[in-house]
Length: 84
Image (tube, rainbow, N blue to C red; front, side, top):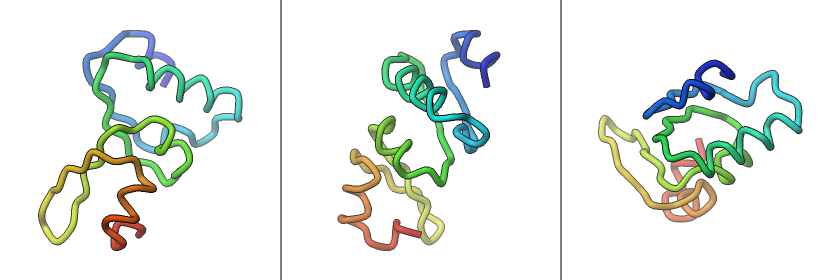
């Protein structure tokens, strides 16, 4: 993760990036992703982390991709099936 971040990529693909990070490093990663100009594609079960860093959600549902300009909480209110 550190190597990918410090190489200043155009796109970051992150699969469960908060696993094995302590609270301080999760906060650092949130700050980095919030202020980074790169596009990030993130898969995570950490809803608090996602709400702090995302601006758009791409939801895969019934063989279709749908884009929402919401954080996770707003998306779940709008599309209850997104909770799972």
